[in-house]
Structures are given as structure tokens and as C-alpha cells.
Length: 154
Image (cartoon, rainbow, N blue to C red; front, side, top):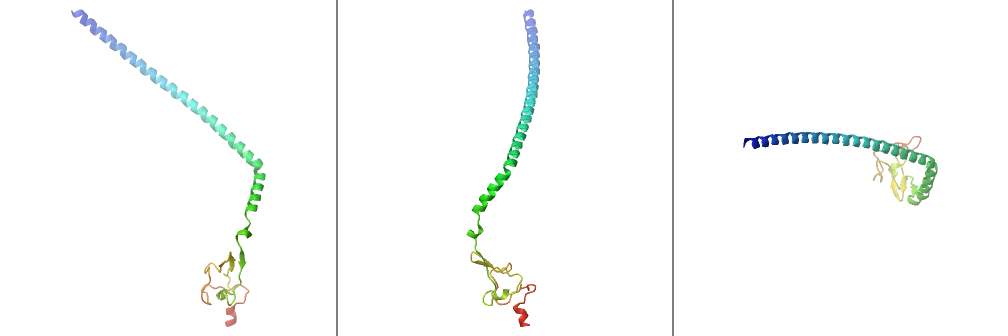
């Protein structure tokens, strides 16, 4: 009865060794396959990248060449269209008002006076866009070579 048990343990040991060798070989095969796939993917991605870069460069060069060839025509066409669309005289009416004793008396002879009216809205000066309320402006500055109302009073 001892022989069959001994044979059974020997067979079990043999099976265990065979399975260990199988799993070891299988593990090496998987590692090898993984390395080959990684190398193939790396090579493929390198080829795709090289091809993509080459194609993008070619497309950009073609686009630049096209734009260079048609730039003058395009520029002229765009400016003609813009000039036809925008005519300031249709949108903004600009008039100039001169200060007098009745209107903006404090601004007579002032170098800061702007006095232009845009569509009916006057811009008197940057400091006082609507003018000052009295006859004396705290920011009044004499225009060079102009006689002002203040010169007459002194």
C-alpha cells in the first residue's frame, strides 16, 4: 500500500514542477509580447507623428503661399468693401462752435477749448465737457498769440 501513495506523491510533485515551469514560461511569453507590442506602438506613433508633422507643415506652407499670392487682391477687396460700408458723414455730424459772450463766455481765448459738436452734443473741453456755469473757469489757460477778454480788463 505504500507504493501507490509514494507514486501519487511523486506524480503530484512532477505535476507541480510542470505547472511551475508552464507558468514561468507563460509569464516570460507575456512579458516578451508586451515588450514587442510596446516597441511596435512606439514605432507606429513615431511614424504617425512624423507623417502628421510633415503634412501639417505642408498645409501651413500651402496656406502661406496661397495667402501671399492672394494677399494684394484680398487686401484691396477688403478695403474697398470697408470704404463702401463706412462713411463717417452718414453717421456723425461734426460742427464747431466758437465761444462767445452768450455761449461759453468763460472759454473765450482758452487753449483747452475744443468746441466741437458731435450729432448735436458739444464737447467744450476735457476738464469741463459741458462747460462751466459762471464766467470764470478755474482751468482757463491763455492761447498763445491770442488776445483774451481778460487782457482787456487789466
